[in-house]
Image 1 (cartoon, rainbow, N blue to C red):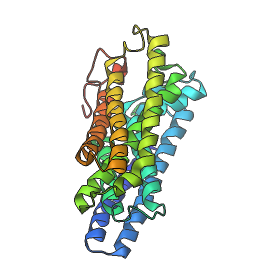
Image 2 (tube, helix red, strand yellow; image 1 turned 135 degrees about the horizontal axis):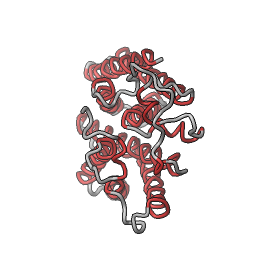
Image 3 (cartoon, one colour; image 1 turned 135 degrees about the vertical axis):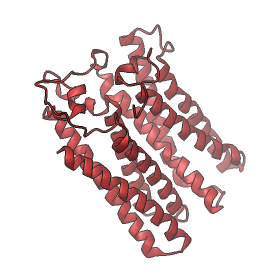
Length: 314
């Protein structure tokens, strides 16, 4: 199973790189066949990530402690809900979930039929595929980020989930935050596509408005659940006595809120075009930074320091 999962990630990396370049060259050469191949590669990438995710989930549910990740974040006495939540409990699993969700979102927006934004799709698809490739490279080549790393000696039981994480909030809070982070990749990709193609009208906003709203709602829900968790369980001294990592999810929410308002002003009054583009880029970069801060173990005083590492790749 571990080999199949590793091979699935490797094939996802190859397919994402191939499809990204094919999208770009297909657009520049005005070649519909190449663009069709790129879309097929995109669907294949989503399929490979799906296979990898299913394998990790099966390993978690069946207590396959030959997986280092399973041994580190589960135990035989964990309930079903917490076994599932172990998928995103550590650095490797959350990166896989990030990439899997992004592949699903990318497939939905690129393959779906549309009347607006067709000229933006190739570059936007290439950018989102490049992000997927970056996440996959981390999983394959960073020593602490491979969800399919195996142990030479299989333990009889795992280390289990940190007691602080054995809370219903663990089932929803991290997932909604990740969905918000992933969702903001779409306005970022289409904004850059508009820059690359010179189509700086409202077209890219029309394509991404629902996705931007979805990402904002998901991130809002994740932050609200984080406040509840901090106030009722962790005792950080009130809704705003947050862990530093939780603050890192609030910052992109603020810029995402500004992006929503700025895009509305641009569409209705033709104002703030540069500001809207800048906010789309900054919000995505802050989402990447928030993911890194949460999963890198950079803040040792944080409750999220249970990742057990200093930086990604060490």
